[in-house]
Length: 146
Image (cartoon, rainbow, N blue to C red; front, side):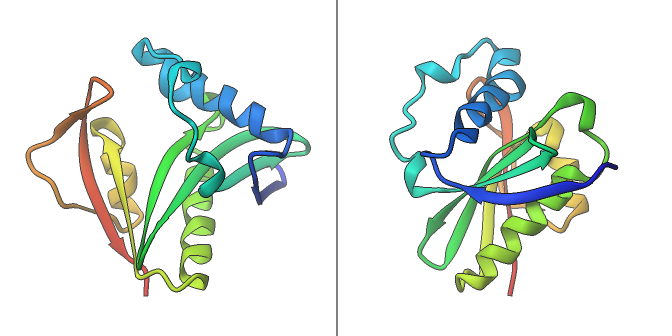
């Protein structure tokens, strides 16, 4: 795969608007939602990891800090890049940063069809049966990162 750079941005960065567009295209529009209708007021308090090829945004994941744990949120990778380990690289960057902040665990809500991806990289389903979030079955998953 081309040379990918993963970096942390804040919501003041111009890339943030592209991040919102990517999240809308990958996560919201396919289920009939629009990111413009969501409450994004907590986003400045989260850590935004973006993946860039040259200057093109190709992936994103957020980390919400919660005491000794973190929550992985809003993983989105451009469809044409999916299946090429970019999601894994984004999660690895998130986990490395989380460890550096003293976090011991990462949790997430995985859409039912994405649970296998997270299991392959060490996450365990902690909720059965699945629960509905944004109209889709999800599983709560966790991973210790000490």
